[in-house]
Amino acid sequence: EPTGHGLLVRGPKADPRVRDLRVRDGAQIGLYVTGGARGRFERVEISGSGWSNVEIRDEKSEPTLCHCRITGGSRGGVYIHSSARARFEDCDIGQHALANLFIQSAADPTLVRCRLHDGKEGGMMSLEGGKGTLEACEVWGNALSGIELREGALTTLVRCIVRNGRGNGLFVHSDARGEFWECQVFDNGRHGALVQSGAAPSLVGCVLRGNRDSGILFERGGGGAMLECTLADHAKAGI
Image 1 (tube, rainbow, N blue to C red):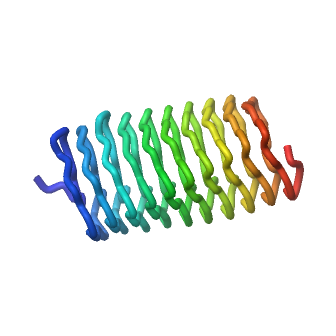
Image 2 (tube, one colour):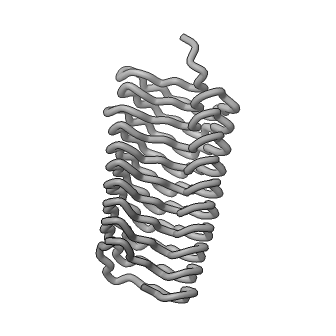
C-alpha cells in the first residue's frame, strides 16, 4: 500500500541487501525498518526526508548500515526506539533540524566509527531507558549538547570525541546513568559535562579540556563517579 516512505522494510522475514542507493526528499521516512525486520545497507545516501531520515523500531528489528550518509532531514536524523537494535559502521549523520541521533524506550544500537555533526539541535539524545554503545565515534559542531542522556538512559560511549559544539559537551540529567570510557571532550561552548537532576554517570579515563565554562558541573542532585580523568584549560573551574 502507499506509505510515503523511501524504503520500507517490514516483518520478521524481511532481510534485504541494498547497496549504492540514493533516497532523497521523501514525504515521510527515508528508511523505515519495523516489525522484526533486518537487512544490510551499504553506501546508501538518505537525505531531505519530511520525517526522520532513518527510523528503526520494534523488538527483534536489527538492520546493519555501513558507510551510509544520512543528512539534512526536516526532523531528526536516525530514530531508534521500542527495544529495536541496529548496527552502524562508518556512517556520516549530520545537519538535521532535531538531534542527529535519538535512542529511546530501551532501544540498544551499536555505532562504530560514526560521525554525528552540525545538527541544529543536539548530536545524540538517549532517553526513556535508551541503551546503546557508541565506539570510536566523533561528535562535533552541534547547536545544543553533543551528547544528552536523560530519563533513565543507560548509553555507553567508548573512545569517542565530543568537540566544538555550541552547548555542553555532555549533558546527563533526569536520573540517567551512562558510562564514558576514555572519551575526549573539548572546545565546547559551555561545560565539558553538566550533570544534574539525579543523574549518575561514570567517567573513566576521560579527558575534558578547553571548554568555555567549567570542565564538569554537578548541580541539583547530580552525582556519579570519575576515575583517572584529566580536566585542563577551562575558562572557569575544572569541577
